Image 1 (cartoon, one colour):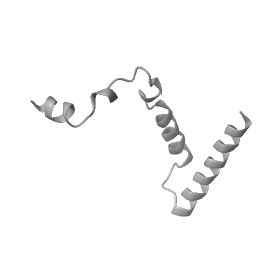
Image 2: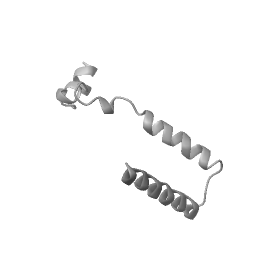
Image 3: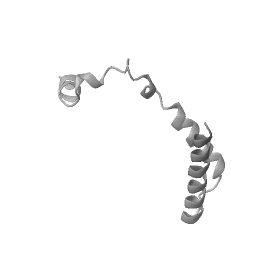
Length: 68
């Protein structure tokens, strides 16, 4: 009863199958980036420091993307 109420009626069954969209099965990339951020900020940064580093990371990612 719970399964039917929660999953069969709330969520469209076509989205259950990831066979054709294999990239969304795991979140390893996000976990890796989270680990990287933890090492980058060994203590809680100020807001400005956080913004600075995130912008820097964004520019590095963008530059890497453009090179490929």
